[in-house]
Length: 442
Ligand code: FES
Ligand SMILES: [Fe+2]
Image (cartoon, rainbow, N blue to C red; front, side):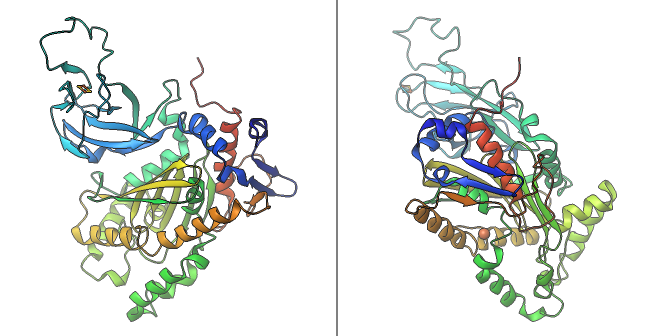
C-alpha cells in the first residue's frame, strides 16, 4: 500500500446505503502502524496511572507508555509528575523498581542522583566537570507532560496538544464523574495487575472491549458458568433475569473517537445493585451507597450509576469496563499484529472487604488473562488476525446500526450495534489523514 492511499482514507462510509467499512490493511500493515505511532499515539493523551497508586510524597512507579520507559512520581512538592527513566549521563535507567518511595533516584551505572522533581543533584564526583555544567537544567531528567482528570493521569508526547480536559470532552468527563461518584471518599486501584499479550492488532481488542454483539456467541461458557453458579436461585435470581440482559442502554460515540456501550445487567453491581446471591450481609452496605447517591445526585443519575454497566474506550487505547468489577485496561500496540495489555481493578476506598472480593473475583474470573472472557475473546482476535492477511476480502464490515447522519454522536438505542465503534474509526481516519488537529490553536 502506498502513502497516498492512507491519505485518501482507510474507511469507506456510505451514508445513503448506511454502510461503514474498514480497509483491512488497517489491521496488519507495517506502514499503517508506523503512521499510527506518529499521528495518533504521539498526539493523543495516553493513560499513565491512577493517583491512588502513588498517594504519598516520594511515591513512584515505573511504567512503559508506547515503548517509552517513564517514572510516574509524586514529588516532594506534592505534584504528580512524569519523566523519562533514562540517565542524562549515558542512558542507563535511573529507577529499576516497579514501585516504591524514595527521596531520590540514583543511577546504578556511575552514581548520578536525581530528586523527585527530576533535578540532577549529584554527579558522584568532585572532579572533571565545570561547576555550572547543569545551569540550564539540560541534565535533569526529561519531563513528560502529565494531566489528570478524576484521579486518572495521562501523558502526552506532544507539548502543543490540547488539554486533557478538552481532549476527553463533556461526555467522557461525565462518564468519569459517574465512576468517581461510586465512592463517598475516593476511588482507588486495588493491589494486583493483569499483564499479558495477544498476537493481534490492538484495534481488534479496542472493538471487542465494548462489543455487545459478540456476547452470546463467544461467551456462552461464561453464561453457563453463571447459570451453574446461581442455580440454587434459578427462579428469582440472576439467571432468571438473564433474558432481559442488554434490554436497556445503547451504543454511543462520545466525540474525539471515545465511545461507550451501556446496558442493564443481571449480575448485580457492588456500587448499588444488590442481588440475593450475594447474601444478606452486604445488602445494607449496598443499599446505603445507593441511598447516598440518590440523595446527592437524584434518582435518575443514581439509577444510571447503580444499574447500568458501561464499557467504554477513551481514544486511542484506554478501556474502562465498569461492569461488575471496574477495570482500567490499557491496550498498547507493539507491532501491527501484536499488543500488550495491562489492567487494574478500581474500587471505592471505603468499600468492605466482602464487596472488594466480589469485584476482584469478577476481575479475575471474567476479564483476567485466564478468566472466562479474555481467552475466548483472544482466540477470536487471533483467528481474525491470521485470517484477514491471507484473504482477498478487502473490507471489514462495521455497519450495524449505522445512522446515516453526519453527527456520529447520535446514539443507537441498540446494545449490539457498532455505531460507537464507527465514531472511533472516524476519528482514527481523520487523524491518519491530518484532517483534524489535536493541537492548541495559537
Ligand atoms: S549512565 Fe547514569 S550515571 Fe552514568
Ligand atoms: Fe468478550
